Image 1 (tube, rainbow, N blue to C red):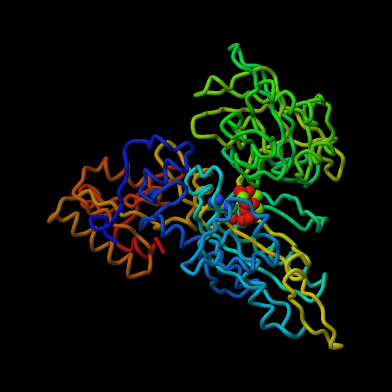
Image 2 (image 1 turned 180 degrees about the vertical axis):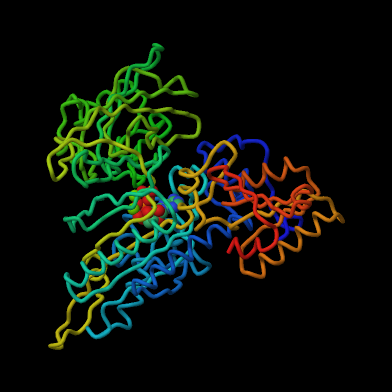
Length: 561
Ligand code: ATP
Ligand code: MG
Ligand code: MG
Ligand code: MG
């Protein structure tokens, strides 16, 4: 492709609203543009990278025996009602009605749809095992879409679903996906770690998350210093103490509001008007409110007394207590100091209060949702966690690092097959329920993760497997001169050999061309200038190391291959 005709709108300025480096660079290098919160367009360069990731995922899924399908994004409510998730999924599920007033949602995941498909057609044990996957756009109305492609509302996921006749088969499917995932992330050139995740009712080690190691990751990983053991603390409960505000303004307290989803729900639970009390809800990682910051007055003090959160010094609370309060699966409970700074509505500042929530706090912004007119900053300091808090297998200490969840393998067991009656006939003609597993990969999130791990001051350094183009060919000539003509010839010969090369044939200063090539991050830059042409050489620069080498122009294409 000739850059003079390529849609590559690079930006000189760092976009104001982009917090993390991948978001900044994706915008600056002209890979994506935001349409609205958490929703992006992939420009040609961005789409090429996305397709590279998808191709690797596809190849390894096929190699592992999974078969690609494509399921609809729009899903009828009836299926979600069968599994009970229509009620339980929370606000991430975008629900809407069609013209006939029937309920639908945009698919955040596809367990219901795929189970519905398979139960209609798979009747005999001979048709099992079966693993179906798709690469498709998902929609989750995330509470806090941010960091560009890292946490979008619309994003591309690979999701696979396995169906087996028994536990043994399901376990085999699980570990085969685990291996395929490791191979995918190796091929993508990422530094990653597979960590144990909450496996809910299934128990055992049948849920693993694949974490790309990066300081900007939203997840906290506990890694044993001695053995191989590592686990995600995403669901870990932390107990937070709200520190007193220095301003002497009206006090507030904190109450928990189980089962409430909206300000209205909370007000109803508390038996007060919405206008009067609610300023801020504290959500857990699944978007369920677990606490509300409430303006303190006489009426609310009464409520406070009725509430079990007031009486306990939460610093001494056990994981069991937190589980009881929050309803969250608790892997860890430790005291933290939560500093809440109310930025916009001084009214809310107050004296000491307590919050208990399931969260991922580690000097990290908590999932605090804001009402329209209040801005809150909340930071928590997690004390050092020891093995007493999280019990690695060997009993030694753990260290904490941060990671980005790029993949998740999960043994589902009978959860969906039972609810939706996905059964088959065994050898004896007896009805049996299928055993399922589900396996997700954040295809678009991988692009962001790769950039978090591979960049420098100049821009992106794409791992070759993901790079939109293998190389940029930069001509330092002018239109109509010998250098440009020779560069064009070289470009054609590289293309003819199937090398993915972008030809920078623009009428731009060399500095501009070099800067753009660094920014977009092609693994190699091939430069042809007047002096080089005279001597019959081109210069090849390795984007990562900056190393340069002069190579003979004759036979360059062959040497490059
Ligand atoms: P997270 O904990 O980050 O919210 P999740 O556990 O909800 O992710 P899964 O349901 O396991 O996500 O989905 C499979 C994969 O999809 C995740 O491992 C992640 O890579 C990707 N993914 C999930 N949510 C998003 C999102 N909002 N934006 C981009 N990718 C996402
Ligand atoms: Mg999520
Ligand atoms: Mg997760
Ligand atoms: Mg997950």
